[in-house]
Image (cartoon, rainbow, N blue to C red):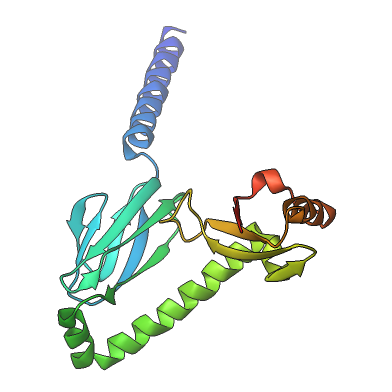
Length: 202
């Protein structure tokens, strides 16, 4: 009887120790890391992840959460990409910079294959931007529009001039009631004028 009790106590202690060890491992291991495969052009740019320099090309490991990659090189326009890693899922990132000086253009002339790849990426980004804008602003599908006493077209946002995904809609008033007719046209087509950045011009 005493031997059975002792065996039960030892077994219980072993189970508790095992649970503590496993729990500690899971606690300190944290969430799984994700691998991010980075491709950079120019291939000798300086790349930082959350402010810390990393290899410009290849795989880097990141913990779950939001991260920012920034690419910089003399002669090229800097660029940043923000992404979210989760559940250890593999990710890929393209850090392609575009020349903004003679030095950058000279590099491109010496590296035509990389320049062509960067141009293809620029086209892809442009197409994706247009798709996002079309989804965000359905009104774009009807522009430019000439109405009774007004015209409407798209333009650069004055509220967010540096944000390429923010647009303003410029309404040129051709006579005094043009503003009224423009608002009626917008509402009648299912748009909410109060949610749009409207800029009136004469």
